[in-house]
Length: 166
Image 1: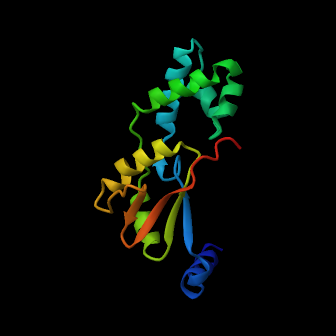
Image 2: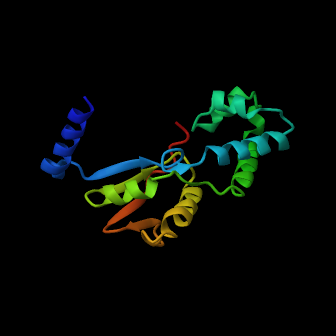
């Protein structure tokens, strides 16, 4: 079964290449190993708000939509803005790294397709992390428009950067 799928995928790539223009990647948790940084920021944020919440509880209720996390923790809605500010403050101190093999995959896919990034993270944070994790590598260099040059294609960091209200 796996060989059939691989063969089918190869046929799609090589015979119908014109039908696929972009390959989209998720940022947090897919390309970027960000859970530990998220968890640390949450733990510090909850502590600063005087709340006791464990990493085990966070894992059980984790969602890219952080409002779900706030609801699960029973954080009063009146404190969400302060929680957002605190989480951002503590997250900026974190330095998550790319997942093992992420650059290799990007280099391979970039040979044939345009690469695009989707993320529920803030544009400013994702831009900074792209510059630190991808542009700093021999793979390419950052451009002021927040596009990262990858070999012969462009990594577009703005396909859907603020879908976090959904």
